[in-house]
Image (cartoon, rainbow, N blue to C red):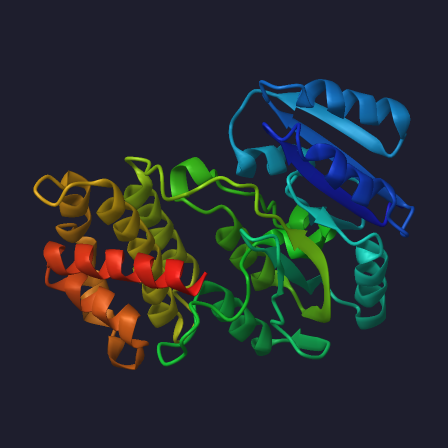
Length: 341
């Protein structure tokens, strides 16, 4: 049996794919397969994927039309044969002992999933260790629900937006659970984020999960600025994701306050982009956000009194539809961030 299947969607990453593949092909865990999913990439990625398959028999390639990251991962899941499944973004890379150490931890702890700390690259080229756990940890039973809620959002009185990174790329998942419950990814083009619904679905069926303190995954800064564009339907995608998360967590005590904070945080993301890109006298996308009926649900269920000051200000300005205040706050935060850098 293959120990770990590593699914790597590829789209417009010709500048980064070699770095990623070098870290995967040289893994100390040799009994792996690497599934490269060419998601209709218009550059030379399709040829690069085929070249890797010709070089190493552990590499398998899927060529498909472009449908986005979530559905590309699903294509990889359909052919994966490993005992565990891993996901890597093709513009990132990993430590060469990542999957050996995570697989061994899974076997020792009888874990259905194993997570690890990770490095995040900053715009100045420095690396930040996530340090989500200080020592190796194990969660079982009802404790897994608390871990999952920490992925959705922190409790209101904690400053950080969430306790644990929701992304699937710093973990391995037992494939038998994915198969038994027919788990798959939603399209981020419809729900804004494909990772957290998958995490909730998987963790619902997990009996034991482990978290390794060592950072093995390198989440890379690729120079793309998210502040220069804002997709017209972004807020609607997050609304859809909010409704999905509410539905998936209905039976979990205290979940609603986390889901509401999750939505507020993502809405703040949208507002900051709109405030940066639109003129104050004509802000149709800001009006769309502030006048949406979904705020009636959030306002009834979420009490922001314990939020950090900036987050609390965002919440109240949004609740009372104060565009001028929101624009001023957004620009002030941008100036503060530049000063800090």
